[in-house]
Length: 107
Image (tube, rainbow, N blue to C red):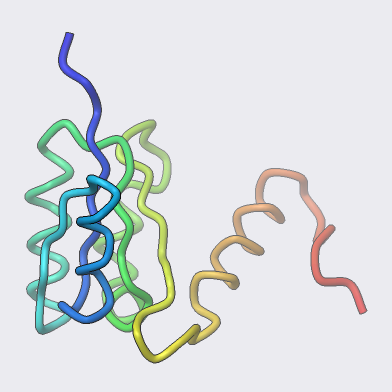
């Protein structure tokens, strides 16, 4: 049985550190390239694909393809410039969809 892998897609400065923990790293320079890399790696044995927010925000349709599939889980993470709020907004929407109400971030 082949083990599942974890990959990280994003700009070099944001993802290079993930090599130290054994993740596969795929550097891209545009949203279009990120979408192609996501599709390519999703066909391989990846259980989790992390994608930096700076590219994820521009390819919501490419990410949505995997939303209801068991694998890979596509998770947005902040890039080198910090959080854009995109990943957190996705978590909030997912929780609302699963529970039927906004149980997070109440003021």
